[in-house]
Length: 295
Image 1 (cartoon, rainbow, N blue to C red):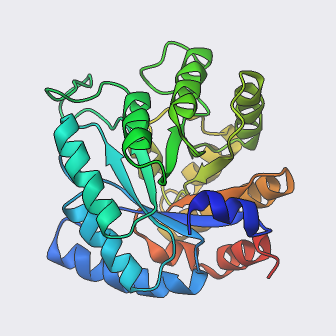
Image 2: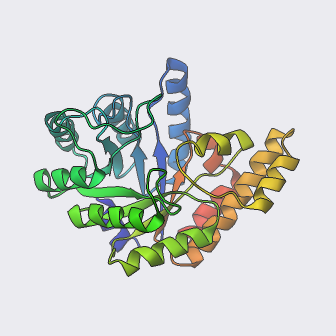
C-alpha cells in the first residue's frame, strides 16, 4: 500500500519512522535488534536514507528489503541526486520498482562531507523538483514524498523562496511532504498555512527528533536550521551532567509536541530516531504514539 492510500483510508494520524543504513558490522547487529523491537510500534510506514553516494540501490535497498522481511509495511527508500547521473538514477529506481517498492522519498541530498555547495553529477539533476518529475514520468504508479523545511533550507535566501521551491516539487508530482525537525509547534502550523497560501494542497507530515542531548542539537543544526526554545535549552543545560535526565527532558518535550500536533490536525508524525529504537519504546512515548491511533 502507498503512503497516500494510508493517509486517505487509515482514519487516524500515521506514525512513521526513519532508518539509515548501518556502516559497521556492530551497527548492523544493533540495527537489526532495534528494528525487531520496533515492530511492536507497528509504524504505518518507514523510510530508509541513502548510503554513501546517494544511490537508492546498495545499502539502502538491502536495508529496505530487511525491513520488509521483518514485516514492516510501506517501506520507503530515499532517492537523491547526489553523485547520480540520470541513467544511474533510472537503474536504481528500476531496481526498487522491480523489488516491489511502491513509495520513494525524492531528495536533492546534501553536499558530500567537506564540500560547502552541492554540485550535480555529470548528467544529473541540480534540484529535487527535477528528480520528482523524472520519477513521475518513468514510474507514474510510485508514491513520491519530498522534504519541507519549516524554518527554511540552509541554502535558501528566505522561507518564502524555499516554499516556492517546495511548490515546484509538488507541481512536478510529489504526493506528500515530510518536514525537517522543529522544536516549536507554531513553526509547523505557520509553515502549513504558508504552503496552503501558495497552492500546496498535499498532506504535510511533521518530522520530529526526540532530542536526547545537547550534543545532538549541535550536530543536527549543521544539517538544518531550527530554533531551540529557551526553556528547553535551559532544562537541557541544567541536566548536562546527567545523560538519563537529559534524555527524559527530550522525550517529554517530544510527547508534548506530538499531542499538540495531532490535536491541531497534523496528518501524521514522522520520527527521526537515528536508529535508536529504544527511544520510541520509552513507555511514555510509546503510550503517546498508541493514543495517536486511538489505542
